[in-house]
Length: 251
Image 1 (cartoon, rainbow, N blue to C red):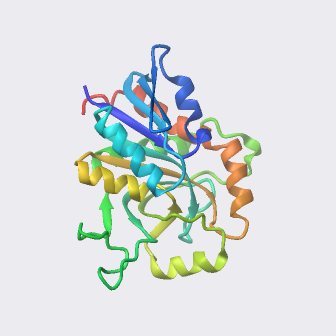
Image 2 (cartoon, rainbow, N blue to C red; image 1 turned 180 degrees about the vertical axis):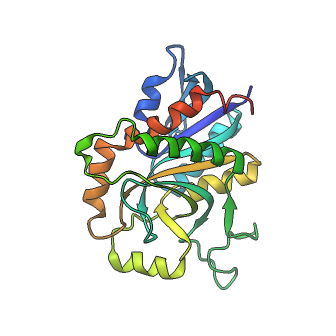
């Protein structure tokens, strides 16, 4: 039976997952990271805090694949909304990921990953479809969301996610990215690097993001509030039914 890896950049994004692991889970310390290995809602898993940024995400993804033999990887957490159709509280499942800050011109085209000949890394369609269905069910029921959150019923989107080593909290910079990447739904700081690692190892992956802010001048306050009060509700609310169903145990 294959092992599923679940990664998040901040503790609040994976806290409820760690709390729900079986009592027999073990912790392995590698490269200043704790890897929690056990069973989560009936599914063999390794869960790890990657920390923030592309290098951190790439290192963590490499370890779960090489050391813990993960056969699928899910990255979960928050993101800043970029596309006009994406609102705070919405959920985005990636069709593909790209690195918006990669620019090796004139040696390579803007956004192209040097020596790989590609700009985008496509998420696994089967794993992503499972996440989409579970996210849509969560959105229909609003399971666990406090009434006082002040959010509209969450919508679920499926599309391009852009990754970069920058926390975007500038209206002008966000506008520039919208002009340059009109397809991108949201911005985050890890997924594209994890996707590149999984691509190079030949391991299927998916990325699940919840919109915490609009990548504008209020992003810091909005992100912090969402992280502290809602991040774990979304992560556990979407992943628990999926893992309990046994859909991810066969690969």
